[in-house]
Length: 327
Image (tube, one colour):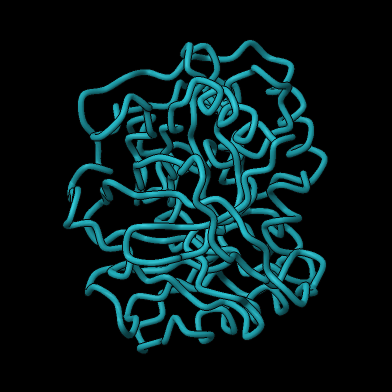
């Protein structure tokens, strides 16, 4: 098997592994992304059931799918952390101690630079410019208290410093605003905010991409607490022993994982903001009000055939805020 079809390096192979291990189950019954996807996924977390793969969704483009609870726990104590272990290329039977020691070792290891390739599965379908329509994606309303539909709950942002020395992959939520824009937090103390300030100080907008259905090890690396100025992309190789394959974006100079399900490209608006939230969060509560947050303008969408959008339905533990980012 090619290293690039191993579960840690290819989300589609990761999904196939979960299905083969009966740690995910395909749901052929038609399900509504409006609250039903969120309710079923929350039930999967609470009962430690297999990850639900929704294959028939109302109000979305045929062929688009959603995977809930991609790093939830299962009820078999021997393989309870199997989905988390699969993100890192570890056996299903890996214990919490094994998983944590693997992460600590990777953080201390020399990074392995990504390998640039000319093409990849994430480019099987492309829409740019006026053809971009985020409404075609199965963007769910996950909690009844949410201020909108959240597309980015299990993906990561990609930005790069103007001098090209620092590439940041960071996990943060994004809410659908309209057919070509998202809105979400860009905190100045976080790496995405630091890099945005570098571009703004030059009077330029920040080139940006978002990856959904990323290679699982890339998602894990994007959540690692690495120091300012350290690029997360090299830690995929540190986690798996193999560099991640990346391809240049269609509309800017960023590089995105080639084995991704869905990639958004564009920029962070320097000035515009829009209401975002509230959103049900990892502590099991929703704040009463949302906030004005920066706008992300999408100039291109690329995706694999029959793409899978992974979602984290935040709430009482354990869900991905606890299993992936918590570790």
